[in-house]
View 1 (cartoon, rainbow, N blue to C red):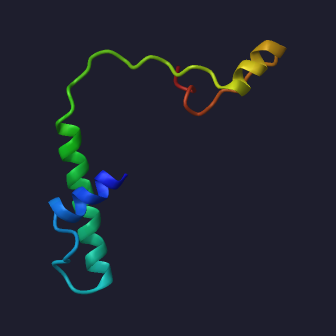
View 2 (tube, helix red, strand yellow; view 1 turned 180 degrees about the vertical axis):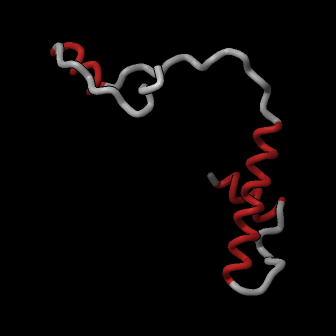
Amino acid sequence: MEGTINEFAHGHGMRRCRYRGQPKAHVQHVLTAIAVNLERLSGRPATEETPPPRPPTAFQTFLDLQGIPRSKSWRTLGT
């Protein structure tokens, strides 16, 4: 987190605002954040494989051991 804030403050000049007024300054900060996120995403290697599924939580393991069916989460509705 501190690295991200440092990057904004020093690398993208977020200590000084180009515009006057809080609404315009907010728009500048939001657009800069979008640009930094796009820059970071474009630098990531493209992967064809899907990430491995997350291990079950302790609560999900407890439900499985007790034989209680888990309700479908919004994350798994499409699968």
